[in-house]
Length: 550
Image (cartoon, rainbow, N blue to C red; front, top):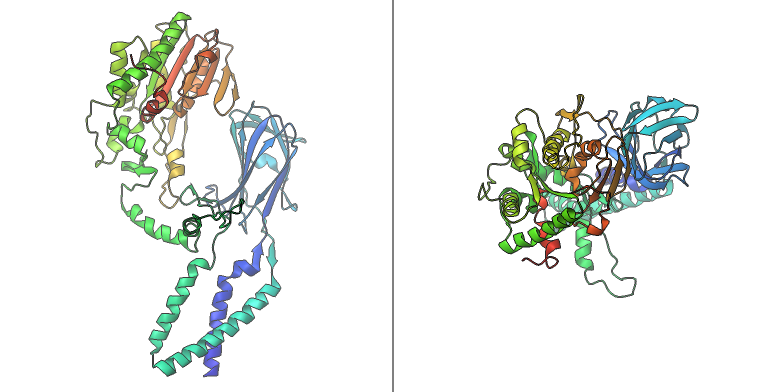
């Protein structure tokens, strides 16, 4: 009998020791560092992937913002990766596109990448000299991918004392527990099945707290920020009465096996052809659409403008238009259609417009045409006319693609050319192809995603211009034109930038819907306000009370 209890205690001990391996066997971070020489500010992200392929789906990352006028060396700490296989470095440039030199790339100070010319580089022209890897940026995002297997593993820190203590305590407790169970069987005449059931039940109660993830701040699986844990006693020595609820939210985001149960829960979405999360709606043929209320209500033609709101918007736009006319300028108001408006055939059939003819865009366009002289350009009909030849919106992004933006550009320039006869309309000499993983792809839980491998047609641009990038302001200069433009815009206009910049001398791109007349200079010939269709209700908030309807 004693021998049987000993064997059971040993089995329990092995199980517990395996479950607590992160306590006594800790892997140290992997360090990636290199010398870097350039100017301006940038953000650098280093990714290490667990898989030996080019997909980079099982990554651990580290990033930091550097002022390259001061910093000449960058060191990154990547945690929770035992055996990294692939390396990727992404550089986000905030300021001017200055040349960047990278050399002496090392991992853990003992593995050196001595063939940097083997990196696959996107977003820059590259050359290799004795100075290192020289990058000439073509875009404000540069991606360097090392396509070979890394011969490295994270160092471990074996806590021998803790390991022995856990073994001894677990064995003694397990042995004592088997004795209690034997007495329970004898005294209360309970069957072995009852004993096993009770034991398993209590073990399961402790599993969620056996390995709580206390370090993670972001859930890659759900693509969201995890709840934070705030102390019971605050810094001002007051009691945090929200602590129980905050602790519950923190624990619910971090308990052991949470991701496994999410996978089980989300399996029903994979079975359903048209699943929906809080951010993404899956339509037909792997087309994704935005699930936010503003997007759905825009498509279904809800939340329309009242007559007072239309008047207020008309006053705002008319003020800008009158200012431009007084100062020998021209103003254009552009509405970029939502993706669902152009491709309703891929949208879920259970979501239908209440009134096919009455939308926010139609309301505004009709009202402005009847009551003002504002040049309003709603691009819906233009894009529908072109969608039969090629795909003009990304399947897994909320935005139009480069080709859709180009067709929008052509329509806009057609209107502008009535006022500026000599303006140049850019005609691409050829087209290239590329694929895209867009914002909807990034919003989708990774266990639901099926990557879009569609190749999209992209008009080639000469890039014979210079741009200075900032978050909310981009300034571009093209010596081949003599007309200046300023555009207040949202993210849809980012794809218009290469084509507009081919047509205008100085062009300014401002990420804002509220036009500051004082910021429009004497040299600006054209003023544009661009807004995507789903964002039209935002005007209700920022116009309210500022512009009286008359």
